[in-house]
Image 1: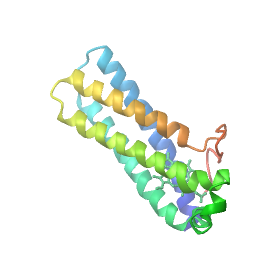
Image 2: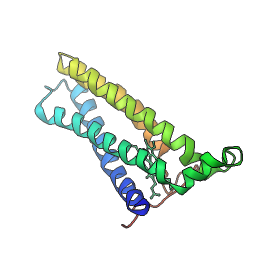
Image 3: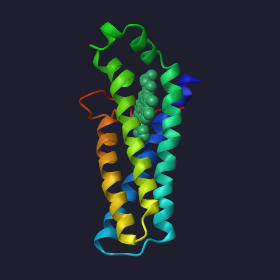
Amino acid sequence: MYPFLLALHSLVRWLVVITLVASLFNAYRGWLQARPFGAGSKQLRIATVTAAHIQLVLGICLYFISPLVHYFLQHFGEAVKMREIRFFGMEHSSMMLLSIILLTIGSAKAKRKTSAREQYKTIAIWYSIAFVILFFSIPWGFSPLTHRPYYRPF
Ligand code: HEM
């Protein structure tokens, strides 16, 4: 179960990153070029939050079964000084949670706006902040915090 969830969580990361980048591109273009807010933009806004929520559920499940997190919680005093253990036990999970909350709020706020410009602007601002937090909390191969593979086979 653990290796499967870890591989799935690793794969869904791409879905989150791709939908989020597409949403940002669409939001800035729509905002700056004063485009109408069509069905495609709405679907993209929803797809991004949905992908993030799926990843949240997978992340929470992983949190409960990960031996790494288990070690972190059982030996907090010493584990908090170990970079990789602390990263998954504390930093990654809390920053990702924050990022997903910002995406959810941004999406809900955009939904209530009446003009296309305000909808695009709301998405652009909230999703940009969420993106920065999310991007730097992913254990990319080049991350100075902790690195994991770009693709983990099932
Ligand atoms: C959109 C949000 C998230 C993204 C993009 C993301 C991405 C990743 C990636 C790429 C890995 C490395 C997988 C591997 O080892 O191949 C990982 C591991 C992990 N993530 Fe996330 N994650 C997100 C949210 C969360 C959340 C919200 C939690 C917990 C509440 C969480 C908990 C974990 C845990 C526990 C691990 C693995 C620890 C281990 O190696 O045992 N993640 N995540």
